[in-house]
Length: 130
Image (tube, rainbow, N blue to C red; front, top):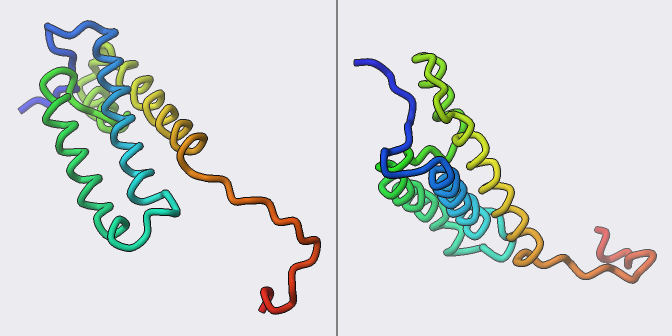
C-alpha cells in the first residue's frame, strides 16, 4: 500500500484547511497549557492531564481527519510527503500548526497565567534561604 500525505478534501478550500489546522493545533496546545503547564493545575487536574490531552487529540483527528487529515504536527505530514514526493499544499501543514501553537501560547501566557508579584525586599530573611 502506498504512503500518501494528508490532503485537503474536495469540499475544503486552502484557506479553510489553514484555518482548520490553526484551530486544531490551538485546541491541543491550549489543553496542554491548561492541564499540564499552568502552575495552578495541581492535584487532581494534573493527574487528568494525559487523559484530557489524549481526548483532545482524538477529537481533533475525528473532526479534522475527514477535511484535511487532522495533522496538528508538521512532522506528521512531512514524512509521508517526503516518501511519496508529493508536496501539494504542504505549506498548510507547517503554517497552520505553527500559527495555532503560537496563538495558544500567547493567549495563555499573556492573559491566563498570572505573573508573580514582585518582591520588594532587597535581602530576604535568613530563615527563607535555608
